[in-house]
Length: 639
Image (cartoon, rainbow, N blue to C red; front, top):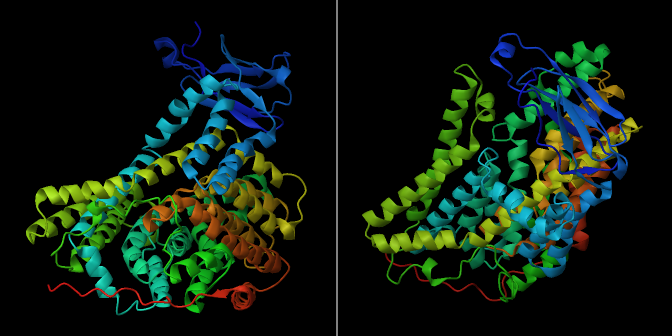
């Protein structure tokens, strides 16, 4: 009697010509007799010509994966036989370059129209069109039911939690604005951040301080410092740049963060695969701790290190160039901290977010809820990580095993409750007014939520159409070992920029490039010999290149959140930040990836890169003067 329930699990809707893809077959549950004595069932995949593409066996209830390649349309549909069951798989076949069109269309329209919602929606719709077999009506329905709804409802990936976290934090900020806490923070920080230079440095240091999670970093630092930087006439574009540049780059570098466990697990997988594929190096590879490799790659992560340095240099030197310089000069002249006609990611201009007359400006009414968010998130990271990693795990392992999404929810909810308590206990606002401020803060986040959901949807589109797989093919073939770190950085940067995901880029490339580097001789002298730096350089190039896209791609969630927290036009943020990111990336590739591959000591490469960036700002940078008129002084309200 045949096994019941045999099927192809999640068949692909789109495949690329000559680009390998995976097809997963699942064995059925079978009868009770079959369950008592399970036997493997044969499966095979044939194309429309009858040619055998793959075959094997699968146990009842288990899965088996086939790696297939289709080169012509007449090979479709595929016939998948599992036991006596036959299923037809007929995906849309497109050329490899098509996989780049959805993200490129979104990016091009965003920069051209300066309107990100339409741009992202166009990119998602183009991908949905391919999924629907280029039927425009069906493509429109797939736009909603296949991409937008799953993107918003993705609890496992943390999307739903991030939306609620953003809404709760926005609501808390609304209460802090209404109860005078935000004004109090501005007045308390004013003597310290008395100039634009000090204000930028203070924002930079705040970004370094919230090192444990990139999402929390963006929203906490941006919302806290925005009133301060507005008062100092620092452009919203510059604030968004500082916030964005101290989010993912910091979280990815610090060994105690929500990133570390994920990165170490991917390095471990890559080393394991390399050991299996290279028996001669298996013993040496198996003796190396993935955490040790992670730590030793930090000096080789040239892009995030230099990105942080460049933020500090532009802040301390008071110099900018390109579109950022124009934005800073506009703000310094008093022509607005954002350009006229900008579509702000967060609406901060409504009267519902202003403190009523007579409300005392007490800084602790804002500081205590914000510190509560940070404290509860840190406590949650420790407790959830300790529960997962066990009582004997190190602090690094504990943070790596933590549940960041649940803890962000706990922290934002706790912050809201503390903000409510402080407001009502001091009778600053009535319960109705407090609720109105809370809801107004949430409403201010709606544009950002729409952009975030569309960005996630576009990320799902790039996965469906195989953008990452197509870019990964660029690494195949004969590659010069010494140029591998540079090439890996370029591919990782392109992949993360096009897909908007750093974690997805790392997951795809690390298991690919570690075995590739080892097979090319990059693990020779793994006890610390000269070639070891090439393996470290290649691993760090994946991690650094992934950060590049996370940092500056218009469809990256941290880029969107940075625009949100800074209340900046999202396209303006991307346009002003991208030249800075590209400059740092070029310097990182030339002096870092290529220089160290040819023998330049890593610390010398970093020093030369720092000197070059400083010299660039001195020669090409425009000195941004202090505000031509002093910011309006407000008489503090008696407390």
